[in-house]
Length: 429
Image 1: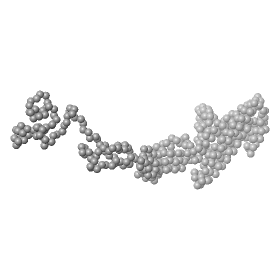
Image 2 (image 1 turned 30 degrees about the vertical axis):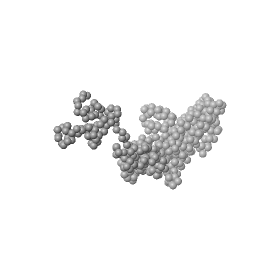
Image 3 (image 1 turned 60 degrees about the vertical axis):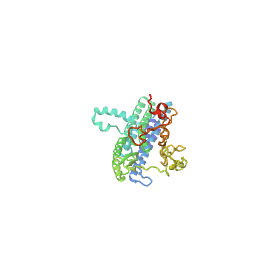
Image 4 (image 1 turned 180 degrees about the vertical axis):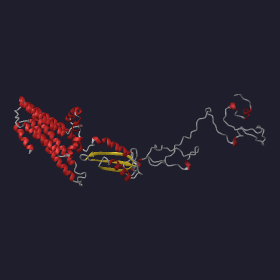
């Protein structure tokens, strides 16, 4: 009824400033609807469809109310710009009366009804530019009158502040029009009230919008980080990841977290400790416990790491050369002969370990003898036939006719003696 009466007076006075102030009455009507929704939510319990309850209806109501108030402020700005082109005459007969009626109704609905959602949002949201400027003036005033600190500090209620500021603007408009007949001040007052309305509602819209988007509240990030560090140091906890915390409604925090524990840890014990630490801040908590998995992927099933071969690729590997029997052994080295084809290159993650050993070549290193010199021991049966042994000329041992023999080499150069006579003659090197 009050809103309808004020809209009629706005039409009769042709005042844009009174219209902007009446839009605050419409906002108070939405505040009362939000209060009714809050009372309904407290009586409802969670259902399988709404497992977290109905508290988000309060958030949605606050967001819709503040956004509608900002849209009304934009409409006032648009009409005020048009009025600057052609300013109509303002009738002040009911301007001052309408200002006091609107102020009384605003304060009555503000102070008589306890609106929990808007009280929480006004305290949790960031301060508006109007609150910051008034807080600076309040500190100076409280320095002179300390008794006002309980009312003006730390910051005033934004709804009471905008109601008082709008009433002051309308009073100044009434006086200037009555004294100087300066009608353009009405349009300036309307722009001022619209800007103050937009600046007051914008932080509340941002805060309630972040709640609807399930973002982590900024004022609890520090406490959450501290609790998560404590959880990560619990016995058996290896890692805390995928943590997400958000507000279901105003003042109720929910969250979910994944906790990786040791293979030998007790899941129920770790779950109880984690819940006990986080429940002091998070009322609705979901904890997913999973043990550390060290199992390796099988060759038959599951994806294989890079560099490993599938079972279907084993047939394409080169065949391993068979080991030769004892008859194929090299008579010099007594080891299997080197295969004609090289064995496949050794690499990790390949099947089998039957790889033939690498056989070094049996070629003996060159000796420092001259070119064309044959070497090798002469058989004992040909010793006397070559004249390399002489009986009776040994070391005085006197053992039969053949007392001693020299180790003879048949192809020794002549300077060392190749016949019997030369072997016993003197020679110079």
